[in-house]
Image (cartoon, rainbow, N blue to C red; front, side, top):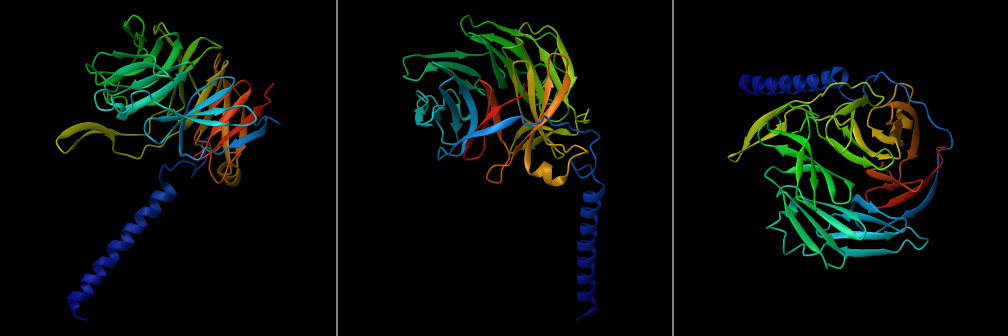
Length: 356
């Protein structure tokens, strides 16, 4: 082997070892969730639930989009279809077609479609158009409303034909909350509720819920421990936090150019703090991805852990463990009639809650 070849191999070895050293340093000293203590503890409710039925619909499940006392409605990865699953002993499954899905796929931009069912109505949110469609299972009604320019990313129903949307405001390049009345077509913007970063709303992304028990809306951030509560007038908001200690957004956003189109995107890893949640009758059930200091790795990895917070005053009440199911944690869930309906990749598990 020549001296030149030896130098080349030595250079490659040094490069490889340097890269490995950097990875080890990042792993041991970097800001990686759950690698170090997170600065909070959990208290667990005793005897909180019993497992009920498990349902295997035979589809890849996406989201629970509605429920009644008799049925659960679930969106699936198959475009244009939703499942109606009976809550009765037979757990019968009926496949529903979204009315006129193929006909309006391009013109109404159904590629960005979100679906909500408030039986007997089905609401289709074409978020990028932007448009809202009110229809029925039998296609007897198909009423379209085109909204002012600017897509929306979150929606909650706050009353008959009343929707609260998180919608892009082009003038500030960020998202704000608006109230839209489907019957009249009126749209009202919030009064300085949302913080503005000018990044298209990426940093402040989260989940939006309306709770009939408190008649208020709740917005839970993905990337920090913040919760915002407000009513449908959109005038003022109250703020409180979940039990973890991540009080700032650990994510950086930049405007990038991709094939001639510019868009905001994260340029650092987006560490999601609050993965899944639901608000019901004054209680926030929040699934945090952060391990408490008094939890073992085995307990945290082997359970979906929900922290329960009283949204009336922001008080943490306790936490609930739901064991992993078929090796997976909860992806989505809702609370309905004293039951937690848990969604996994290919199955649904119904739990009976005993919190009182």
